[in-house]
Structure formats: structure tokens, C-alpha cells
Length: 526
Image (tube, rainbow, N blue to C red; front, side):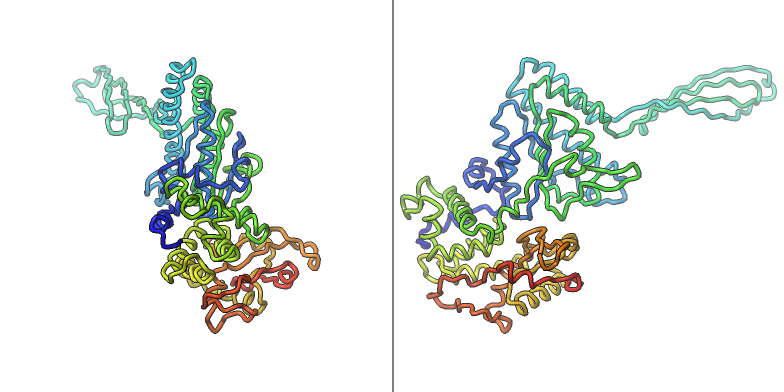
């Protein structure tokens, strides 16, 4: 089966990033909902989290398509990586207001373009008025604010003594084309007396007046008979210092409107929606201004519901392969028509697929990459289906190539200490940390690097009342990476070098009774 040329091409063509898939139908066909989409398909302002590779962009794209099914809605998808210019992001010497305003205007201009398209393609009864209101909105966004300022000063004039009694008056006007200022000078002089002068200056300031923005945008939406849904993806790609200010702009400019809904996807530990200021809180107040939707990571913890997650992952892989094959190819050629048959026929047994599901650690991009490597590993060795050895070698290779090499010396050292303590000394893969260490920079970076994984938050241990813990597990790849080395854990693990590998899990499961005895403190992170 693995030698099928068409199947091999399909495996190699699976897109590992949703934004690289330009066919929206394929994105919809390959999407498997785990229960998040119904919680986002509403008119609430929401933020939802998920680590890199968990499928946030895929969710956003499918949500965009779902929302757009209602012809009255204008749906705008914005990738924050495309906003602004490099100078606006990196030049900290520029005023913060200027940096944020440029990004906010980018969002507004993309919104304006989408509204124009909506009015043209689905015109309301007052479409002409909507276009006029949209033109007014364009002026609010693009036109600088002008104000007239009068300045007074005095000048000394020397005169010829013969004409000391002469009286003269003059008025001059000038336009400074560079600064955009218009000046009028009026004077009265007698002999060598000082003359008074008044200069009127028209100053231009690049800013947005929020009441004007609220009024004109609301008018456009009412006249176009439309609701605006703004889907902001890759929020965490914005610099941390900018994020609270841009949040404030969105809060003042968009959130007050009853016809506007904002959805944001972000990495939990790489976003900063709120900051303190002299006038109070700056940015979003989570829970008050904008709600927090469920975290994608919470849906993909394998140990909570193994059979269900294995089915979800098998369905995902089958859909991705089927999208790259002729219609019905897997069913007609290989008798694979559902997730259960996929796990049984493409793999030597379903237990092997379960190991693949565990190795992915809830990250869909890792699932796809480990599956691809395991497929070609088994094919290279002449196997008809993917065996456990292929999965383990693929998981080890993916850990070394994608995860381990991106850790700096500090993270490598801390991870090594955790692995030595948890796997080596405690014969486990999971451990507990006091919840107040959740925001520790080292824990956040290891979590973002996908070498530590959340198993449960806020766990209450009866032996330590009053203290809440988070349960973490070290990456499957760290465990497999020890196989065949002097540091291999002595846990009765089966050899995996041959083909007749037993079906039992190579990387053992943990139970909470054993985890309760493995409590690490801040010293291991130093």
C-alpha cells in the first residue's frame, strides 16, 4: 500500500500551514471540528489561544467561510504579519502613537475595501447612500486633522530719518509649501517703532477622531444593511510593546459599535492586551471588553480521551490525503473510507497509530510531519504499512530537527534537568509545578517550543491543600530520544529495533497517583 505512487505524492503534498493553501474548499474539506467552531460562531468579541501548529489559522479560515454564508455579513480576515512596515515594527525611537496609528489605519483600510466590495456585490436599498458614507469614512481614515493656530510676535523696523514722521501700513501673505502653513502678516509702523505681527498657521496632525470613526462606520453598516466581522489572526506576531496600544485603538474605534464583532487568535504567552497607564488600564480587559474562548491546546490532550483523539487525528490525516487524491481514491483503491479503516490499514495495527497520536502531543502540524516521516521511513524499509519502529524513529527525528535545535543553551540545560529528574529519577513523564510558576519565562519558552505540554491546569492535591498546581508532561520526543542510549529509562520498555514489536505503548502513560509525588519547584528552572 505504501508503494502506491499516487498515495506517496499525496502524502508529500499535504500543506503543513493553512495559509499556504489557496483553495478554500480544501481547507473546509480537511477541517475536523473538535467543538471550538460552534463557540466562535456568534456575535461576541472573543480571543482564542493555541500554540503554533495547533490549527488557529485553519479555524479562522473555516470560521470566515461559515460567517460569510450569511449575505448580510461583511467578513474581514487580517493576518497581522502583513500589517505595517518594518520601520513601524522595529524602530522603537518612533513615537508609539505613530507606530500604532499606522497599524490601526491598515486594519481600517482593509475593512473599508471589504465594505466597498460588499456594497457592490450585495447592494442594499440604500446602496448609494452607503457609498457616500463609505467615502466619508475614507476621509476620516486617511485625511489628516487640520487646525488653525494664531501666533503673535513683534518686529523692529529701521527707517530713514527723513521719513521718521511717515506713516505706512503693509500686509503680506505667504504659503509654505513644505510645512503646509499659511501666514498672514499685518503691520503698522511709524518712524522706528516696533510693528505688531500676527501669523495664522494651519497645522496638520495624523490622527483618528474616534467619535467620527464610530459615527461614520456605524452609518456605513446601517445603510449597507450589514454586520462586520473582523477576524484578526497571528496577533502574537506584533511586538509586545505595541499590542496594548493597538488593543486600545480597537477598543475605542470598533468595539462600541453594535454591528461590529472582533475575533482574535493569539499565542497565550506571547500576547499582551492590557497595560497600566497614568489614566488607568490601557487596552482590552479580558472578560470585560472581550471574552476568552476555549484554548485549542485543551482539546488535544491525548491522555484525557485517547480513543476520541485518535479518531480525530485519523480523520484529519485521511481528509488531508483525500484532498490531494482523485475523488473516492482511498475507498476504491485501498478500501479505506473512514478514520477507523485508515488507522487499521495504513498502520500495522491501531495501537501503532495511537503512538503516532501521542507523539504529536496535540500539535496538528507535528502530527502531519511525524506521519510524513514515518510513512517514508516505512516505505524505505520495504514495509506495506507503517510500523511502530517508523513512528518512533520519525518522532525522534522530528524532535531533534525541529524542536531540540531551536532551544538555546539555557533552555537545553533546564530541559535536561527536568528530563533527568522526571524520566530518569522518578520513572515518569509528567510532573507538577505550582501554578504561580505558569508565567515563569523559562516555562513559557519551553511550552512555546512544544517540549513541555499542559496536561491539566489548577489541579488540587489533597496532600497539599491550598496550593494549586499545573500538570505538565515532557515531550514524547524527549523520551524516545533516550532510547538506545546510556540514559535509556529502565522501565521494562520493549526493544523497538526489530519488526516484531509488541503493541504495548513504548512511552508509558502516567497516572495522577504517581504524578502527585513529582512536584518540582523554581530551583530546577534557575
